Image 1: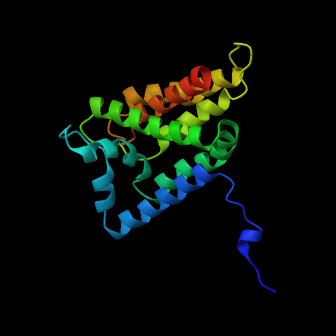
Image 2 (image 1 turned 60 degrees about the vertical axis):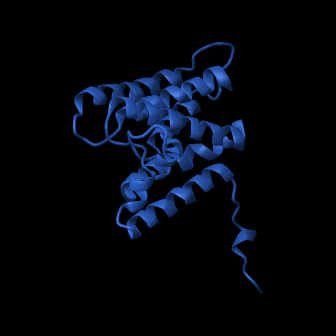
Length: 187
């Protein structure tokens, strides 16, 4: 009797699982190269005519500082992402991930000299998007208000009070704004 794991396991969320595996591969490669992969992928201020800088707007979202950074982001992404991918479709989720990462990278570049890395902007996008997934007849869901209070307001406070904690609170806020725009105005 042959045992085939694929008879029992489903690749149920193509974009989210692919994002997970790409980020995991980048994390492993970054460890092997002692930080060279992240250094190459991270979006930083520089020559605007360098074509690689355009791609770095998106590539910074696949880099993570360490295992805990990766784990913390993907616990939420793997929890919320499949549900959102099922509701909005794979291509729309892919667009949301890419747009959120690019907008977050651009905003971060305008504020700071150093580059932001990680998927936490997408985490915040998904959290807000999930909180308004059942919006109806123009009414604001109470869950959205609580999410804004507990997640977003806290990040605004930390943005101004947590100097030097090496967390891109601005990216979290941008991700939340993107999630609101996607959920309320676009989809």
